[in-house]
Image 1 (tube, rainbow, N blue to C red):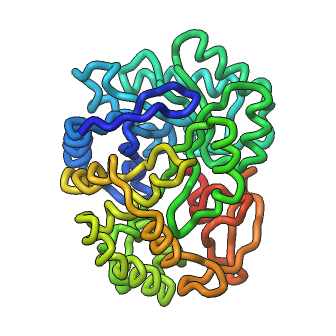
Image 2 (image 1 turned 180 degrees about the vertical axis):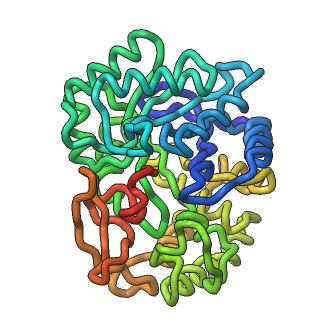
Length: 359
């Protein structure tokens, strides 16, 4: 299978499924087998996935190093690499937002060295830095592009207002926001804007951190960061898991797994070009690849949306949230102080104490 799309105004030719490497952040997901992930990358590559996503923050550069091992010996033009920049990591272990020109230039050179490449195909600002000059940030990215160190650039975890402001100064042609059929709030603003402006969209966590894969009953417990997320706790966890399992007959109608059905429906949105999926072992590749080139009827698409709808008639209720600024970013918490899915000003959704390493 060799499905390819033109990734918006970037002009990059990519597979609609992107292999994500967030799972190589031990502080989120625990230790993962590098051998398994490298094997999974190669299986994905052989199956037609040519788009790979990573970040400077994932394992403090570890994920980029693994990407470099994967790339060794492969034709460079056969793989499209996306990575991100944002945090300043000090020798004392301190971490803080830094999109100053000097930091971006240093990190880019280090990232190229880690991956053993001369050019990054897509370079994203991982989060919004409120005290870095937008014109200066853009001038720095343009200088990297002129030098051939990056081919295109964009943003991740930005609101539509932040993206609109960035685009006044340069060609931010791609975005990477959080999106799943349980958390569709970017459909209200970011996705319509991107459609109108031909901004490429690659969504992360389309399987809602694994919850939409169909493998959970709602009784499981977790040792990774999901143990602190309300969607993986109590009645809410059981309700969402039950709704996912209720889609099994629909998946069988199309000879798809539940995983494939969810990814297929996600990619049917005209504003979404690519879904970034986290793969931990080779066995998970088949289902991810199985969603490429598939479609379902409009009626069945909206049946899936109804299962996860969060309006007044739904079985899954929206959680009460309020906003608070953290290190120049936005996180959302419930009245009980528990971090929940983001509000409209929170384009990401990780717990506040995990924002030290952005997703």
